[in-house]
Amino acid sequence: MQLLNKIGVIVDSFGVGVMEGLKKAKDVGAEGVQIYAVSGEMDPAELTPTKRKELRSYIEGLGLEISALCGDLAGHGFQDSQANPEKIEKSKRILDLALDLGTSIVTTHIGIVPEDRNSRIYDSMQRACDELGMYANRMNAYFAIETGPETASHLKSFLDTMTTKGVSVNFDPANMVLVTGDDPVQGVITLRDYIVHTHAKDGKRMRYVDPRDVYGCLGYGGMSHEEIAKMETSGASFEEVPLGEGTVDFPAYFAALQEIRYNGYLTIEREVGSSPEDDIRKAVQFIQAYRI
Image (cartoon, helix red, strand yellow):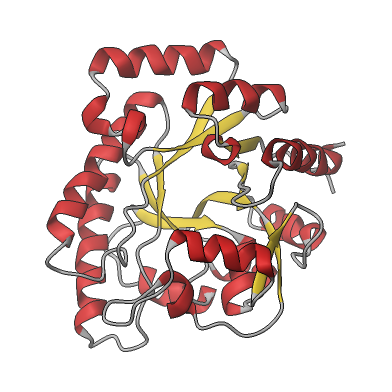
């Protein structure tokens, strides 16, 4: 098996800011980058047209391209109908920024999709995602839902209700292993018509964990980002580990991506650990071994 996919890195995983993170991404051997674009220096409201052109030129000058922006707005995703209008508007502005920077993909978490299609939360999520999907579809772009909070089959059933493919999938194999215990290899086959971006991440699941405890759910609660990070390192229920050291079957996973003819990015994400730069560099080398 010889992979042809380009290798990306989430700039924020380095923990050193965007501009320095871009340099580090180039240094570790990445070909592309994904950047959080919700607040701070990457907030769409803070980036004027001139700043957007300058940033795009800087990234291209490093020999990099943007694989996707991350537009995760947290707060139970799009489960809350009262909060959705503001979140939908912000998501659209993040997609506008993405297009200005040369990518057509914004990844996000939308919240846990309820089992009950007749529930109020399901309706809120469906309406919000359909509006975002239609907006993206008009520009040949995508809002890509990150896998993890629910099984691949359940996510597909939700996506099948959309009126366009403007809402698609950012496939993260580790999230599936860590939280739902779903099989990433079969997940790729199940979601084959929707995958537009992927994360390269690994982990181990020690025991059952309720997805609502990890991702939260309207009216239920859930952990803070800091609590999730603590769980990932403590081994309470699951643990994120460097690429190749967990239970994701990468040879089978990569083979499945080839089977569905996925030709997008494999973007490395490292959310924990004391030396993320070393872990990311090794992850790049891990993937590169499948390209020889």
